[in-house]
Image (cartoon, rainbow, N blue to C red; front, side, top):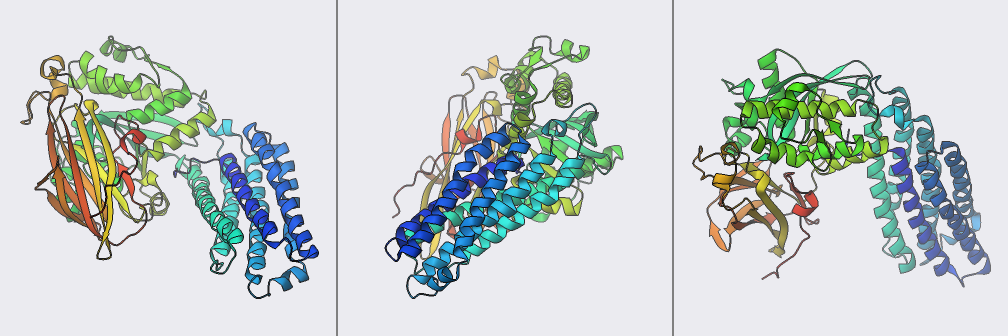
Length: 610
């Protein structure tokens, strides 16, 4: 589902905060109009009073929704609408409308009218349908269980959420259409704040509406779906996360989750001829993207990765699947926080991992799967068996019916936000919707902000050493020259492996020099994407300009540089982009690693412009 992962409860809560901002605007209006006349002041005070009363109901509404008190929430929303309607009614008075025609001050009355109208529309056409949707849903039945999920209420709620989204979208457009040039500051400043807040809640509601529409379909409400499940192993980095070592078919039938056939990527072998890849990506990432399942995600564009992986699976097994779902071990740790610990129950997996924890938790699963498994299990084939067995136990717990609904939604939302959960559908209509969100993992299209910079990591060691690499990414320069922006993005990488890693870590982890990289060292291809129509001008490593590969992908400048770090070594790469026409704030997107994304992406720290 789209990043939305947002329930009507979340959206209603956010609407409450937005209504409070609108109240502030009306309060400012009252201050601006005091002294014009007793009548006008009286009207302004009534508007302020009614919206203050509406604001006072918001905490109660949030508490009722949080406590799953649908009846109480419905009553509170009725009171909310009475107050916002009363405020709106005051602005409908003929004398108020006449005041709107006055020179100089008239536009302020018009703005106040539009704000009161928007407040009422948000409450009446936004909050009311959302509470209706909330009343119709039992979140416990919307979590996986042995008997499936009751998806009909979610499908029935979708029109209510779409109605709310439309109402808030139109209110946002109405306020965006106001000319704030001649408004007094007491009106103009709160109005600008309301515009931004309403735009945010509108985007959230649009995503919630898409989720409510797509989720029942993709969870098998209209017939079973079968998806290729890629478990990305972050110990060997790929642009979208990690090498897809473990594969499985996930069957979803009316919400019942079943893991079917499981394989390792290595079992599929090399594909000859390779699955076709467009010329731009082949030039940047080589033909290996279409030749080996282990390399399908050398590209950061998940739609490319997923379509090739699905084609490889189909060519190998003859199975036609409905899409591709990708998770990494950190996302699995989020899920375990919702399901609670799981036990390794399969006797074969228990024997293989007899030195590993018998119980997997949100705290130990990443270290167990990405480090300890390689230290304690010698044979790569058995490592894959253990990895697949752990994934099966986690999905079994997810399907058990004991999962806390709120914690599961939070876990999946966090996974999507950090790009650790990715989804692709063979349905053109469904994929068109998915592509509007980060869930789609695309490098072009509606989900990409105008000034987006992407930093992606591909392992060049041929081993599992990325568990030991710590990275930070930061915008360190943002200047304008001759009307164009110049932005520098700094990537700092440190190999934290033990000094004696060549001896103390298993050969399978270090690579043992098999691909020309000394055991214990880590080689990484760092790929930097700039905004559309930009250039990649230079790459500077530790203060020295170095050669690099420069290409383009979907009109975005792409620069690639390779680094090699021995244990304890650190290095910085500054990717300098120029000729940037976008003037919005830079947004960083990075490959999800074993680190928290917030630890990797650092706050902007700009050097002075020359």
